Image (cartoon, rainbow, N blue to C red; front, side, top):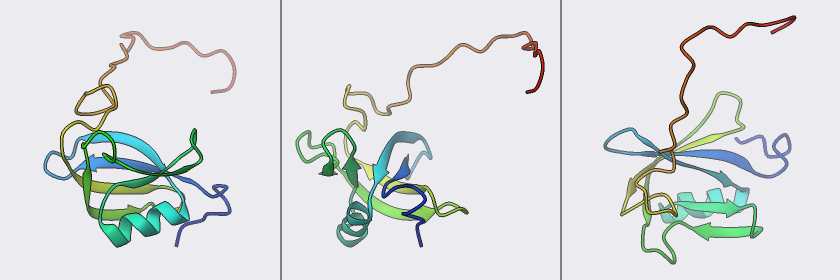
Length: 114
C-alpha cells in the first residue's frame, strides 16, 4: 500500500478532527506506527527526534481515537481522521496550526522562470 522505500521509511500524516474537519497536526508514520494505529484504533506516530514510536496523549492525556485512515493517490502520505480528547498541540492549543501568516495584497513580481 504505502511507498515506504520512496519515503525512506516514514510518511507525513495529516491529522484531522472528525466532527469539524479542522486540521489538528502533522505527524509522521512508519510501518510499525501505522500497524499499531490501525490495530489499536488510536493516534500512534513515529517521532523523528526521538527515533521511536509515540502514542498521542500517552503523557498528556490528550489522546486520539482513530476513526478513519486514508492513503493519498501517490501512496506517500496519510490522513488520519480522529476524535481528539483535549488539545492536539503540545503548546495547549486545540490545533498546531494557529500562527497565521499575513498574505500580501499585491501580486508578486517574478523575474525569470516561476
